[in-house]
Image 1 (cartoon, rainbow, N blue to C red):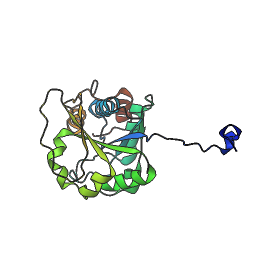
Image 2: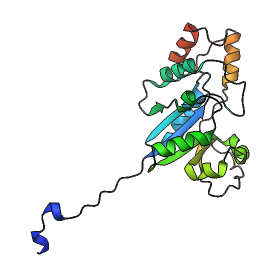
Image 3: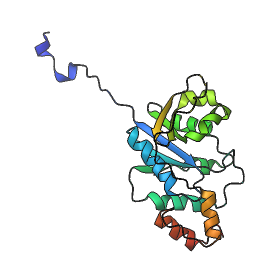
Image 4: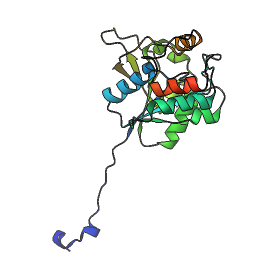
Length: 211
């Protein structure tokens, strides 16, 4: 049979599917503020991610007393802050799991969920010196790549000596805002405007959070 006689059904077709680039930004988000959202946007844009998933922690391992509002309240504030922005998603895996939220546990979960995709964990550049202390960091380095945010023009920090670690520098619009500072502003009856998305502020007031 000549090539011209082959039917389309008989010609093997190779379908190439591009790996989806998914970024994850974890945090307590207690409350969520514009520093969190700018970090997410910077990583999304500079590395042309297809998806950016925010992952609220049940309890941060290095800050055992940091979280002051309930999981449901933090999830509601985060949802209100980004509900208009289809670029961002939320996964409540760590909240549903409960207990201390180690990145390795989430990375295993997301790698099983997205086995063929390219996964990036977004962190602040100030976390690099401590990265070698993260739980099961050698396995974690195999599961995800890291995007670390730095201020434009700042020199590169020394990179941790972790086999297989894949690091990507992101010049971020880092804001000097902390959730601790915002909770103190609430207790002092100061405004959260220009720090926190308006819809999240509404929920904080309605539920009398942090007072």
